[in-house]
Length: 309
Image (cartoon, rainbow, N blue to C red):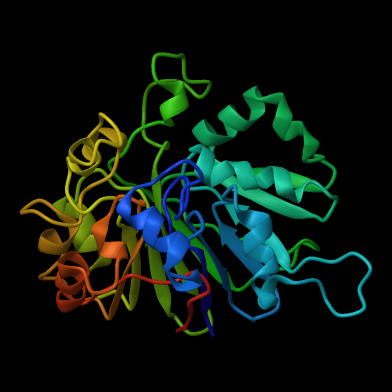
């Protein structure tokens, strides 16, 4: 049985963002916990005992404390049910949480070689002692079975695939440690429970919904998809930035080329937006944008949402 827990549904900075006074952040501060979101990550498990994270957000410590499934065993002096972390990109909001996992519990980091090259080039990640934390390269369209800390099979299959995107913003204008050519900076994941055949897709960053991507996820039971912005020029209009969503590697929810329209003709049982920015009005319950998303069959999940397949 495949279990998935949304640890965080927000984009970089979360909601509310520490230095932001936009409508979404003001509402989250005054409206209670239900409007707040930590930065995007999910956990999944095939047996309910051993768990794998997709990305490690800067809010990871808070997320783990809020998720009983990821607590140490009762009466255990040192223990973690986390067997591995799969990185889909190298943005700060996907990798910074690794630094909160430096206390010696064994797990494996799975990432494309371009992402691992970035970790290798930054000595701060050496706090993850290689005797306990293995770094395992993964290849595009090369399925792998993540392992438990003792080497046992987890009964799960992960298929990484390339999606349109870009390298981390902090590398703009700089040489990429993993080289400039080829895909690997932005991945989607197909996660399958070998025992049941159930699977879900994780695509938290995507600059364009291509026909190939549509064909891949058509018929899925569950899809987590990039919901960073409602409209492409949203942050510019709000006075919060000078970049479009697409230039940051994120397709908008709305518009003829947006996720809602482009994925409308697919047969997907459950569709959830993830990595939702504080500027996105779809975060606000009762907003026209939230209603439009929900009427199109999309869910705006809260942190802690659990789904069983």
